[in-house]
Length: 442
Image 1: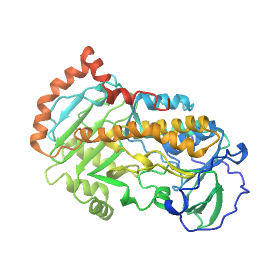
Image 2: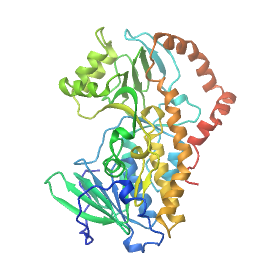
Image 3: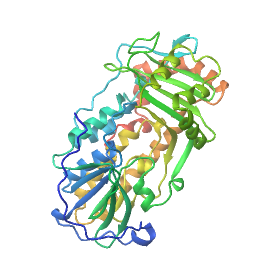
Image 4: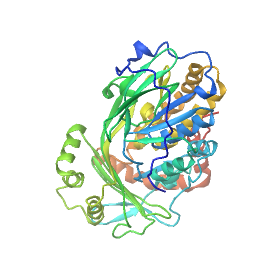
């Protein structure tokens, strides 16, 4: 696998030259036609080459569209922090022909609750959840989605939209190539904003980020390790939990662990600025100091200091009251980011793409009907996934020592409930878990 861009065929449809971004009220409300587009003209632009964008392009292709992808980065992201893949995402992947999504659940290791001095006690791990989620790396899913992309679907790297103007028949998009500063304007029948939490498409068509981002008030740093941490086996996982901050080790069957630092932050902008000033690892040493870090965190931060492959960001949710405006639609984190804590980011991106395929096939005569039905189908489960992030947050960031003590007392009960087959079956059948394993496109 290389990062060489796929060959890009020449385009002949460049009929709009306006570079003024359109507001939804001015351009979008009347733009979705009821007449079907002929097959050769059903041209779609997908913005973003992550899991959401790649799976959306495959879904569009399967629905008879002609997608192309633009990505602001100069190459594919290959970083692989921990994710969970639930059944609804696995079902969607099968529908879209995305092979290679395989579990890496550690089978022989133990899960522990640690402290900085190395003391440990047995504790439930993510692999113990009743819904049997697959433990994976983000890069596993991205790679599988890339390899499943139909031949002939182009990807243009270092390219992003700078203006989107909707007309009665098509949407005009001005694209800028950051490698040379060149711009061109082209027409599309559909634009899919799959460009993540701080979506350029959402900003251009819906409005400023601050209107749609809801801050949880935490910062996270996630990255892969080259080997197991001191005192741990490669398939061992666990967590150090302290008031307002934690350190989690995620084990895998056939891969070195990944880690996550998660901590409470009253001013996430100041956190980003400080990390930019002195470096992320140095800033984490401040946050987790001044007491000694202990052998495990010290080793993890030592590796962070020597790698460029990491995620450092605030934890946010995205709330948009309507996910499509005329011929522009948001998908994945750009539309509904449930936050890292929910465990449903990659799963919902795959499910959302597959549902889009179904509705485009079901309503070929009307894009507006297809997008309206798609949104109506997904709203309820997505909102449920977003709500689940609040209780899941306590697995990573616990605000007080009293909460930590209370959770410690309940861990033996949780472990029993998750391991005892009858109670495990009952929990797995609760609506919140059942929805995560259902086919959201049906």
